[in-house]
Length: 277
Image (cartoon, rainbow, N blue to C red; front, side, top):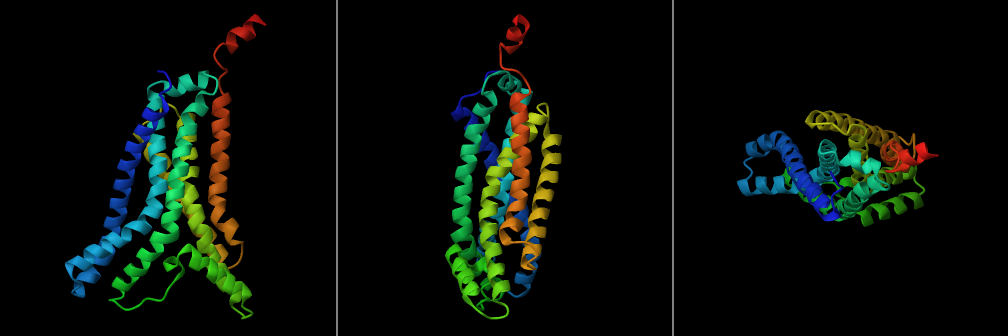
């Protein structure tokens, strides 16, 4: 099957992303509701306020589900392309893999930019209002996840300028959140690379591959992120290394796999040239 044009290819990814994003976000919101709604209901909180709390939970939930949905969409569409024979055709053509992967990475970069803007401005404001609702209307202490990017950077500068005994730890604490916002946004691009690489490695994969790969990648990625955050908070490693290690490892593995996939078969006509030589 010939390699599809960019617009139809991106349309398939957009549909898969929308389905994945809605499903994952609904699942995590349901889990959040199971934990929070009984307590809010027991306090006699109005239905409208409960609905508001659920809506306010969408931004921080989306910060996690957007990269996950990108991975699922890319992996699913590329496995379908493998079943249709498109991936095999792309590997035979010069720059065939690049023509399939480049538009998807471009779209993932746009998603990453939008996610960063949301993580920097929308998520902290929603978190602050949500914390106030959970606290029964009382003003909650402004933790790092309730601060915009500008406020976090100012907190980091203030901590570094302070000569107090806890100044370095406080600056590190806020710097971890700054790097996390960037790293989670960049995860959309990294996971798009990973999804394409896995599909090219297993071009005849099916739904079982999507489920298994998603479970392994998501578990490993977020475990690495959580471990890194804990180490950075204790100042064992720098915030940058702690938050970007997962992206760096996954991107390196994915790029290597994509490079090998692009070279795994000779370009069309190379076989005859080799025989003729």
